[in-house]
Length: 151
Image (cartoon, rainbow, N blue to C red; front, side, top):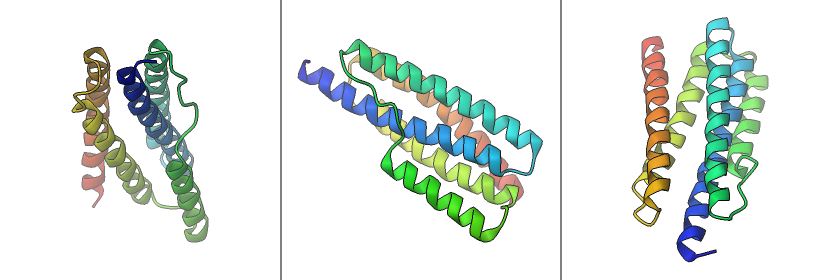
């Protein structure tokens, strides 16, 4: 594999891990919320993020790389911490769930922003990342508005 392809695979795999963190975060939020409306929204978003991870995995394969298939260690640890905190504090309010979702959205948005500005990525990969960033930013902004309407 060419060095530029190795870099692209490394960046994409990092994005895949973070996207899978997001999938799991949305699934956890869907289970934790008391609202059917939020449950549906979180489930749909988990599905969209899973589809995004598949697009990123396909891009890794196009470089001859092996795509990540699991979330990051940090994401796994965060999920366990959030699960434990939920058990200790009882079923959290929807406000607490939305706060946690926004925190995750901040992470994925920042990660895709950084990748989008990576001049070492091939232009077609940067375009894929930029398109994904647009989707992520839109969903981030929706969650942020929702959070601020609750506070």
